[in-house]
Length: 105
Image (cartoon, rainbow, N blue to C red; front, top):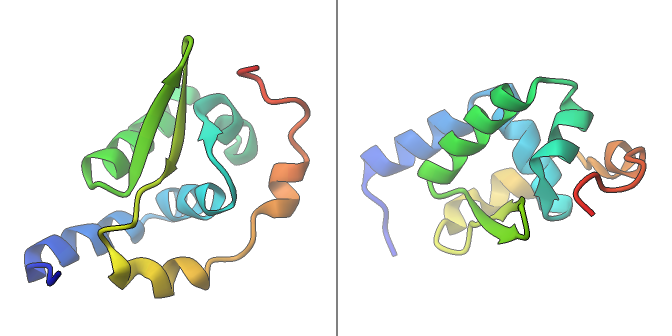
């Protein structure tokens, strides 16, 4: 399915932000809640939530509610043109392994 150039440009603009690109790299590893993303990025929860909101509006992430927690995951099935970018993102496994217990459990 071919995407209009405007949609491609908007998606690429979303990924031009270092924080959002880092969030995508983290979500490439696993589904995460906001509090874990906040811990890894060492940013405020409202700031991280704004970035996640933009990624969600752009269709790059989806959210799943479990009890009072919302978990975010990548949603790139309809964006095969991003596979190359996502595949070369640095691994975030080391940073994610430093998380103690998941805060949302």
